[in-house]
Image (cartoon, rainbow, N blue to C red; front, side, top):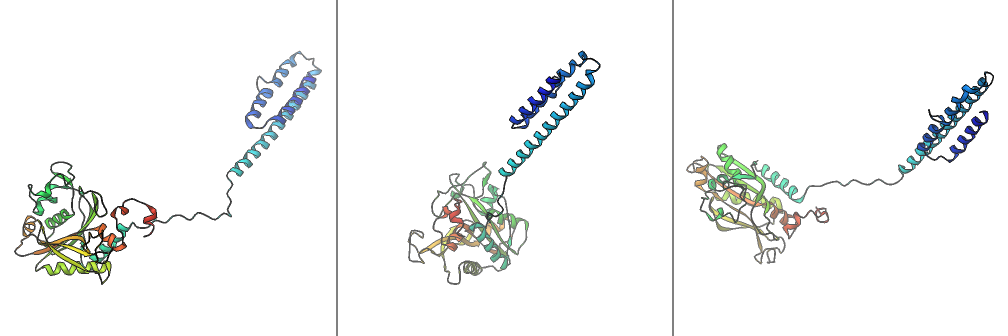
Length: 339
């Protein structure tokens, strides 16, 4: 039995040399020291020994167990240290390498110009009003002197949700909401997204941004409208900016005008951008129609007003010299980083 104990110890030392991971080490411990292990099997045979042999074999068995346990513990410590070192190597960070500079975002050109326009109007004493993008037919059309049989009501030109609800085609509905809930004097702008069934090209999009302006007070004239527009354009584009007004018809204003700005692409000479006219159509404007004032509970015999609506994208294009509106929506960072 003494020889068997010595053989187990020698075998354990030899096996420990071959082990390379903790799972194998645990299997060896169970094989030798477990309840059904080889050392335990030998100790169960001690009942067959004489009274003189038992203390000697018992002492040797304890020593063998202690030696094997110590060897296993040393091996476990070595394996854990090697595993930790391997992990450290895998997760090593070279602190001498230069860091990656985080990308800093900037305002989209549309938002940057919108903020600038807001500041210009706030400086002229205007308030900023907002309204729903999904609007009732009444606020988008009827209250603005557009009866149900008017050509602009054609479902071919508008995105309808139901017969009575649609995606707003203009932010003029916000003006109606304001006039219904506030007495003159009124001086507001209403910026926001609008939706029209337009074919996509260099100057049109089915989704775009519009800024509507409204002034209602006693004694407001066309001269106030022209002066406001002239101030706006000069603040945006510089003192050399020129505008022109052309007679036009809008159901919600009378008299009405189309307002053009000198083409930024050709300087008035004529090009594909301005279709050879030298000017680019920028907005529609006019004096608020008496029926619109009356629909909103404002006496047209006492008060008058002007209104205009301009496409924000066209202002952005004019300001930055962009000749295709689609570039503003494609999210190409090579383009947007220029601003």
